[in-house]
Image 1 (tube, rainbow, N blue to C red):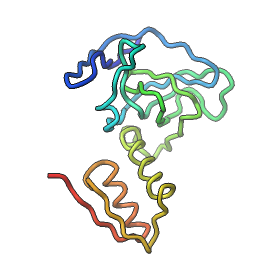
Image 2 (image 1 turned 45 degrees about the horizontal axis):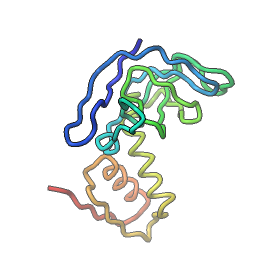
Image 3 (image 1 turned 90 degrees about the vertical axis):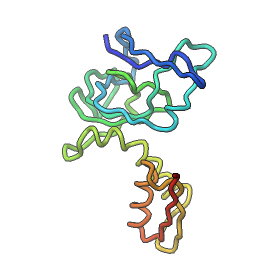
Length: 171
């Protein structure tokens, strides 16, 4: 059994409980990850419970160690350090079943906890700087809430790309 943080009431008076979960079975292409660190993001704060469910386990990204692998998986094995971001919530638990296509190996020189809490922000920064709008040395960029996790990474990365960076902060 593993423990999980469950959101059992959403809205203005959110209510969470820590409960035991039954052992999760793996399907083809899935791995079981023992979570080391889970990122907390704005999406986790505004999550709602769908009408067809009694609870939701928040958390979209985490780092951890693979403890079990399902069928037809290549490139990963038990004991590997990984980070993941999933379209389904669920990283606020001790062990999470994850599609192996959502995993990224974490090199030894990167601390697992840093990888887990910064992966979501780093991927968002990458998307904004390299996909939504290509930032380069001819760019002037305004970053709202530059002191946030994403803003902090955006500012450094954009500066490294040669952009002029202007940041705003909330008081």
